[in-house]
Structure formats: C-alpha cells, structure tokens
Amino acid sequence: MNSVRSGSHPVRLEQDVVLARQAVRKLAQECGLRLVDQTKLVTAVSELARNTVVYGGGGEMDWEVLEDGPRKGIRLVFRDEGPGIADLKLALTDGWTSGGGLGLGLTGARRLVDEFDIASTPGVGTRVTIVRWN
Amino acid sequence: MERIPILRMGEFLLVTIQVDMHDQLALTLQDDLADRISATSARGVLIDISALDMVDSFIGRMISTISGVARIMDAETVVVGMQPAVAITLVELGLTLPGVSTALDVERGMNLLRTRMGRA
Ligand SMILES: Nc1ncnc2c1ncn2[C@@H]1O[C@H](COP(=O)(O)OP(=O)(O)OP(=O)(O)O)[C@@H](O)[C@H]1O
Ligand SMILES: [Mg+2]
Image (cartoon, rainbow over all chains, first blue to last red; front, side, top):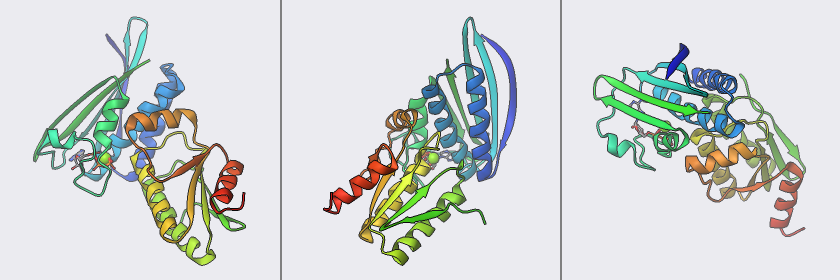
C-alpha cells in the first residue's frame, strides 16, 4: 500500500467543517469514488470534524490518498488536544451524547466508512482515523 | 448577516436550502422559521433540500426541530427533493427523522400538505 500524496487542514471553527467537507469531496472525486460513496465519506467527515470543533476544542484533519494495486482510497485523521473521552465504549453507543446531540456522529461515521479507529486519552486528546476505498 | 430566505406561498412557507450550511446559518434558519410561522399563521412548511449534497446529524436535528416547532404551531413540515445518495447515506448513518414527511419535489410536497389539510 502506497501513500500517493497527503496534506492537512485546520478544523478549528465551524466554517472549517464546511471546508473540510469540500476538500474531501474533491479528493473522493479524484479517487474515483462513486457518488454514493463520496456522500457517505463526506457525511462521516462532517460528523467527525464537528466533534473536533465542538468537543475537542479544535484540531486538524490530515488526509492521505492511498494506492493498493488498482485500488485507491482516502485515509483521514481527525486529531485534537482537547479533553479526550473518558469512556470510549459509552461514546461509541448509538444515541449516547454528552451534549445536546443525537449521539449518532461516531457510530454513524463508523458505519459509513471501510475502516474506523479511535484513540482517546483524557487530558491529552482524541484521534479518529477513517479509510474509505473506491 | 447571512440568512436563508423564507418564501411565502399562500398558506405555506418554502425554504430552499442552497448553500453549504454552516452551523450558525442552520440555527438562524431555525429561529427565523419559527418567527415566520407565527407571523403568517402558515399551515405548512416545505424545506427544499435538493441542492444539499449531504445531510449529517446536525442538519437532521435541525429538520426535526423545525418540524417539532411547526407542529406545536399547528403547521406540518415536508422535506422535498432529497437526493438519492443522501437518502441512502441517511439510512446508514442511522438518522430516521421521525414524524417528518418527505416528497420528491415541491409540487408533490404541496399536494401532500393539502391532502393532510383535508382539501385534496
Ligand atoms: N473529539 C472529541 N473530544 C472529546 N469528546 C468527544 C469527541 N468526539 C466525541 N466526543 C464525545 O463522544 C460523544 C458522542 O459523540 P457523537 O458524535 O457520537 O454524538 P454527539 O456529537 O453527542 O451527537 P451528534 O453527533 O449525533 O450530533 C459526544 O457527546 C462527546 O461527549
Ligand atoms: Mg457528534
């Protein structure tokens, strides 16, 4: 598996959530993802980027275009140095929210991508990694 | 301040969401719409989302809230023009929009509202 190119976007303000969605839509089109798959990935980005802004106090989205033989994919890492998540199992429960949300962001995003990984340490921060292949 | 326009169409209100909404814009729309329903005594609200290329839990929650506010004020909400890719994604996301009706386009949405109001 090769990393073809990569970059990073700030995810600090709510406008950055829109910009992150637009940037990933463009990458997804370049990687030849079908429209439905583009939509799924962009929706996952919206959920994770919003969490980074709202709960993580802002952070970064790192992106990477992957190649594995004929397949192309996109790996995204959302990272912040916010308060972290004390109980990951609870946070990954459908419908659980600490704020006024629907509690669908993390679990929904996980269903919308091919690979999903979350690491979080209270007081240190949170890092969510997703991959979607074409 | 940037705002999403709310058009009056007889006893209905039509909101066409065209921009890539950020959170503040979505919240402003929610408030504006509640004001307009009360000012116009509108019986129905059509939310046209045909220009939206994705609906996430934030927009989903906004649609639910609008329909909840509308219902208390005796108005119905119909979401029209959802793109097929958006509909498929919503199911996987797990967002069900309980109590919100959908129609393919504005015209069908208006027909649905009229039927609901007993004048088909
Ligand atoms: N980056 C993060 N930093 C700290 N806490 C987080 C982070 N992301 C998620 N959480 C915690 O996990 C919970 C669940 O997140 P999730 O996105 O699933 O739901 P939500 O944001 O509460 O609601 P929704 O996304 O449906 O509007 C959040 O309520 C929050 O407490
Ligand atoms: Mg969330």
